[in-house]
Length: 390
Image 1 (cartoon, one colour):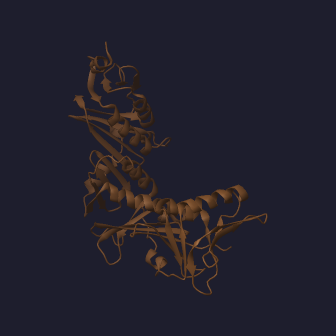
Image 2 (cartoon, one colour; image 1 turned 180 degrees about the horizontal axis):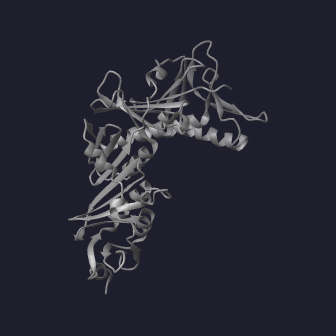
Image 3 (cartoon, rainbow, N blue to C red; image 1 turned 45 degrees about the vertical axis):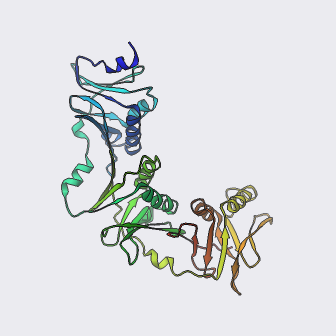
């Protein structure tokens, strides 16, 4: 019996079965595994909810703060929902050599879930009722309420999240900074995304017209941002994403994928006050190649625990740093400085992180104690970085 015939042959005791495309199952299982808990006090949170429905399979997973749902076409016979360990499902799908058949077989005890690609066969006891799974999206939608919804292209959403991701804070005490702030640009009805960790800040504007999002905007948690980025990075077509903000949560939907998440309940800082007005008292032109070279030398000379500070001195035409043993490195720097402007120090790691996104960029500052602005080729992308004491 060849592989396809082996997959197509159903057990006579099967309550329901489905034959699914390997790629569709793999994508859905990976998303579920990335959402479900690895270990949890509530065991059901480590499982994926797999539902066989007419003409499609639905796979969902949740950690209670997020839920992801994938729907894809399949040859389905019968209807049933079962729970499968998310990591087990993903591991099987990753190794599958062709289409996968899923069967739920009746036995004298608990039902048995069978997965096979015609070569490898996995049998699991269906020992947790599917009814135990906490459907977050369904409960959220059932609450109703006013929603703010808008469409955005995958390229526009990827740009907003990718350019703000490096500035998200990881400091738990200021939990309201642990995500990306989405709201309207000042004096406009277009979407902007912002993030800050107190040392650096990103403000990325767009031309996407949106309704008001809450009182000032909403804060999307870091893990949800990363889940969205993982889906957007696949570059699967140009179908727009639908963002639906309602109450304490939001959902992002595109095709057969839905990502639901609680929003961070907190007040985001007034970043417009931090951004301030541009100044050309000090201007320095930076490139990714230059900063990489400086970072490599700094690591070699000072090591992980050494100072990460570099000094920008456009008046002398140099970017330089000193190591703890008295050595130094200097490199030519293009720029300008007004009379009386002293060199300004910055964290080289922050500059390098921003340059990886902006490429060749220009830093400008009013003075040594003021935030510096960094802009690249994208006129609607702005980064702010705080100076360092040398």
